[in-house]
Each structure stands twice: as structure tokens, then as C-alpha cells.
Length: 175
Length: 189
Image (cartoon, rainbow over all chains, first blue to last red; front, top):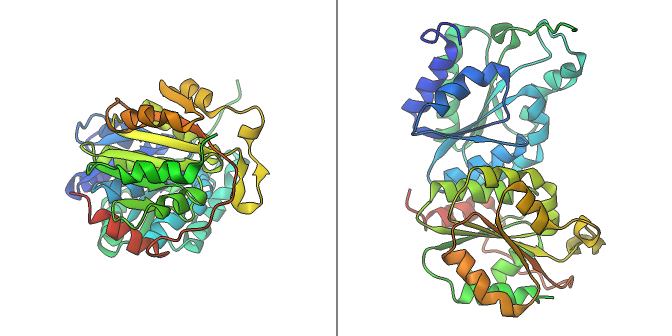
């Protein structure tokens, strides 16, 4: 991780600490890796590696029922896996927070990422998830803070889309 | 083969105060509710495949309680990967009981994969849940009770039961927010 102190993932981590988010689940994504690493070093945060993103929805709801706040980290491709699971926080009015690293929208190399990248905000909105978006590093902390407060104060689902412009599009090389 | 409803009811009737019970959608929830209304139960009526991850999150958040999940083979098969997640984030207080009737009874008893070649005990063991076994008889009740209250979890018990449609027993409310808030009122945060 370059420039650990100034990395915008530190701003997200700070929000986790301030709001007492103590469980973080994920299907890993390069965009989230520095944040996952920060959480793994923190003894107060349980990091759960999932086999599919939808399980993070149920996990998060069970944890909340038991008195713990959590966040699900995933790539935009994972959002589609979560659709029916999102009924659970919706119908139970359990706060649900997810941070989504975007693919398929800014300088994408892999065409297979485009359909779900285009579908991500629509799918989330179709399931009554309030969608926030951060395009610039400077606004990540305040956006995640706003989304988390929205979720936990109003017992709703909220997502923050972290733009590919900000994360950087990986250019693949053959060979 | 176990007759599921009286078996579940017997477990509930003799429950200890440190037990919280969750059920997966369909027959498992009607079974759970048939034991009488109890705030310390939470039954899914949808979100198929989410009962195991929910129970894991709950068990991680409430390590001083014993968490019991009743769910079906259909619900379990939808989220087999969650068994691997449970195994790799060991929670000692979680018992998953799969009421395996080898069919989707709610929708007309179409056979599930466990009616064919799939064995959920072996899936659980292969996923890393070493405390996994199959029961086929009411006589195994005492062994299961020991697992639920005393043994170090996570545990996954496959209870082979009759594929018989039973009367639906509805929960106090179909509104998930009512159910979860009643359930949460029994928990210390």
C-alpha cells in the first residue's frame, strides 16, 4: 500500500472505528485490499471472507440482531449476487451497509465487467438500497460516514459506490 | 426416519434459557412456530439461503449464548459455500440442524440433491466442520441435545426426516421488523 497515511481507505477505516463497526465481510477485490488489511490488523474487527457476496447480507443482519454493526465490501460484480438476499434487511428494517468498488465504468479492460458495472446502481435502487457515490478521494470519508449514518440511523440499506476513476482501472497484459 | 415436528417440539419444550433458535424458510419455520410463540425464536419466511450466514453473524455477536439453526436441505443447498465460511470462522456456540427430507415439500415434493448423490454430512466435513453427523432416529435426541448445549461448535447435524407435508403454523407476525425486534428484545447488546 502506497502512502498509508494518506490513502482514502484510511478514511473509511476511521469511519468504521468512529461508528463502532466491528465486523467486516468481503469477497476480496483489489480496490478494497488496503482496507481489508487495515481491518485484519485490528483486533476489535472480525474479518470474514465469504464465498459469495450474498452471504455477507445474512451475516451482517445476524450480527446486527446480536448487537454488532458490520459492513460488506465487494466489487460491483458481486452486487448481482445479493439481490434476493437484500430482501432480508429490507423486510426486517435492519441497517445494512455495503461499500462497492466499481468495475466496468472507467477505462475498463475486461468487457465481462461492463454488464454488472452498468447494472449495479439500478439493481441496488431496485431493491430499495440508498445509493451513495464517491468519485474523488477527498469525498470518500464523508460519503461513507453519511451512508453509514443513513443506514444505522434510519434502519435502511445503503451502498457507497467507489468509482473506478478513483480506484484506477487495471490494465491487463498478456504473457 | 425422524418425524420432524414432534422432534423439534421436544427440543423446544426442554429448552434452556441460553438458547436462541433461528429457522430457515418454509417447513422449518412452521416447525419452529408449532412449539408455541416464543420471542427467543426468529423464523425466516424468505431470503432463501441466508439462514446459515445469519446464524453465523448472530453466533459471532452473542458468544455467551447457544445458537441453534433449524433449516431444510433446500435452503442449505442454496448456500453450500456458507458452510465453508462457518467452518473457517469457527464459532463455538453454533449448531446447524438440517432437517433433511430430501425434497422441496413446500412446492410439491420435488426431490433435492440429497435425494440423489449429495450427502450434507460429508459436505460439512469436507468444508471443515469436523463435528458433523447424521441422525435418523428419535433415539439420537440426547446426542443432539449434548451437541446443542455442550459441545464445541460449529456443528452441523443432518436429521433425516420424513418428507411429509405438515400443517402450516404461522409466526406472531409476517412482518420481519416485528419478528426481529421481538427477537432482539431477548438479547443483550
